[in-house]
Length: 327
Image (cartoon, rainbow, N blue to C red; front, top):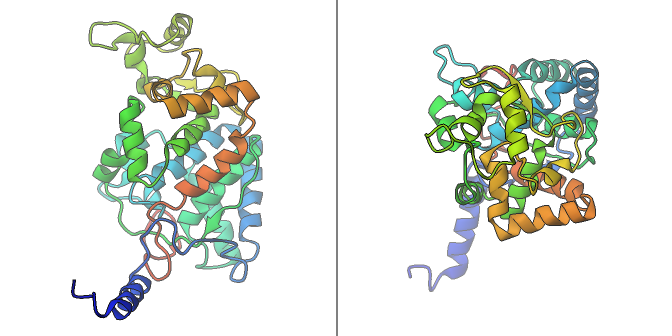
């Protein structure tokens, strides 16, 4: 009510305040080509390193994509998943992150960028660029990555535990958790398609195979033949064996993931849950019917959306010299 007679003045004050506050909003301050003047070869350098890595270690494509997901869903896309802790209390020490791989690749990219443009390209942007380049290297369409993120200087184990979505999540949890991050139901089903590349430890889904309701039973929503195959691969309490999330297509970014879901062969409960919502199921049906007519384009758009979560820009945060430690 105090602004009723001075509406324009109040509005100007509010807008000025918004521009002065360090950026933590959804994507504000990012743009394609952010480093065009300060480090014009930045994206080419990242792409070159990833090309070399993929030629000798193609199995890192899934983990490097997953690392960007795990960064963005905890404190936003600001590189906190990369930080080490002398007391092992950073995000990377949380249970869901113990299986992350590819940190040396991120360091390799950072070293190359620091040599070309010291102190310019953030680790958070490296994660976003690497995620794009690994999916392109495995068959996805390229897409423009917005850059301009800065790096956070806080990384807390419990933040990862509280924000990373477990593979056991049902559709209600999935939709709610994506919504909290400003992502749509379409983003949920599209980004789930990233499971077309990569592997998972047996421990992430063993309950579905051996003890779904605590009575030594299997998840009835899983195809029985698929259960039998998983049991051959994973013994009870197996903590080390890796299983392909998209069998036979683990190193190719394609639409076969969407073929598996209606056949009841989604590896995680969170995969199967996509059949429990009319919008996510309709999207899966469309991709199956049309051979993935929109998925590749949609994936790029949803990755851009995810890359806007909780970013730090402007003077907020910092640009780390070494991705595993604050300056």
